[in-house]
Image (cartoon, rainbow, N blue to C red; front, side, top):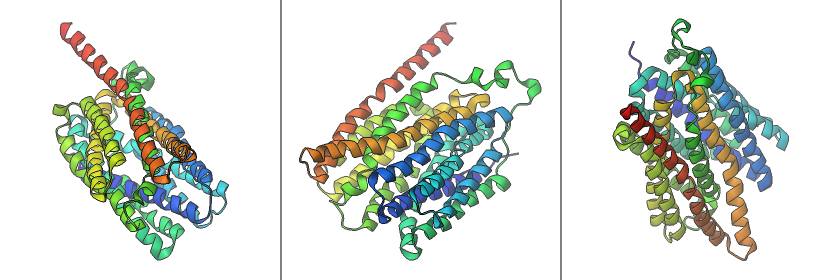
Length: 398
């Protein structure tokens, strides 16, 4: 039976829309409720911590029992159900618990990529651009729609209504997506039975790369709305500028996904990191909104390269018996960066303010610092590429 990519794309679009909208609206909700910045950080960390713990766990269990859909359906339903609890959660500990529940649910989302790879096999790397592009478009559209809905019906009610999107993801998985095509136990080797025996340990070089890169990137993005106030005058304009990056990403992802094999998976990651560093310097020296928009174009291309490169590399490298675990760890490295990045950006910016810098100049200085931090991600991926080249030479010589 031929598997259609559209249900996969629709599933990840709805999930991306719901998750990004929830993050955006929750930060505004906490700000309007007069929670401190440190308390906002606690709430965000509760989500990241839950994903960090449960994403590898769901991946491992999905490999063990040979089922992906049950984790995806349960995860999306838990995320959607937890979203409704914001209507009654008022205290800090209540909001943290709700956000943690959302994190436990969304921790299953990487299983969609594993399921996608199970079915498309060698074609998955070529088709992955469509899948990742759909999610990026969901992020962008979500950022545009969320603010409008919050203005019309209130933030908590908007989050509740947006929970329909992950619910649609769950229904699509249940009725439209096939189950994982796992090998029968009678044909499995000992390594197939034991996912740990097949897990490629070299992937930890990639996870280290992504963690450092994302920590530096999220340090910037956590301060970007404040930084943009210098260039535009309204929240709507800030949201629109932020959305430009995400709306353009699908175009680049489709192109890079199609030619990722020719371009080289790890080469895409390397050039994506270099492009991000250049983009940060564009942000840092920008004096007009036009220059910031140029930066948004550069970051869209750079991040598209990293997303396609890292995911297709994991697809190629991780055997089916450890694929869920491999993508769980990949999500975990990103999530750990989501917990580190805001602290890094906020602490650095505050230090510059304490030295007498203006708010704008302090954030600008922080941008230059984290661009240097991001350079430390390159040795990890370069080392991984060297290991692969050495392995290829040894295979040819033997």
